[in-house]
Image 1: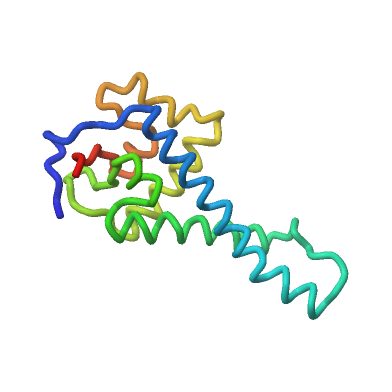
Image 2 (image 1 turned 135 degrees about the vertical axis):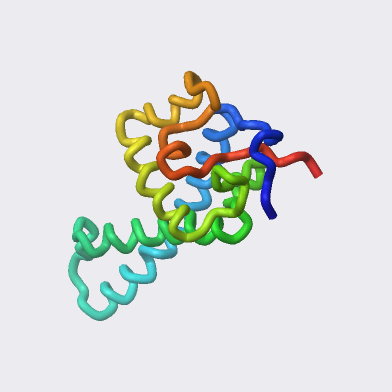
Length: 147
């Protein structure tokens, strides 16, 4: 379903942050389960201390987070938090995001959020209300009408 970008309302910073917080709570639970998938068998088989600081464990958790966002963004354009706050991710032309778009957005979102969230705060000064990762990934959030 394509969205007419010229007619779409842009969400503000508070709505973006609320959806991000909502998703963070959900992701916390998912990450606990994902960690358990590795920790419980490891401790059962190997005993001793689990190497939670290892690169492969951190890569696993990062892959879970990436998979979460990539799946939801490419299957309806909304995570649960985005749905609750009536946000949808679309490409700049209004079409649904593809896997490549979602992955590029994830990488740029990490870059944009790294300097104390400056890339997200950019929506306050951008003339189109876009964050750094919106511009760099050629995607954007739009406000969905109430049902």
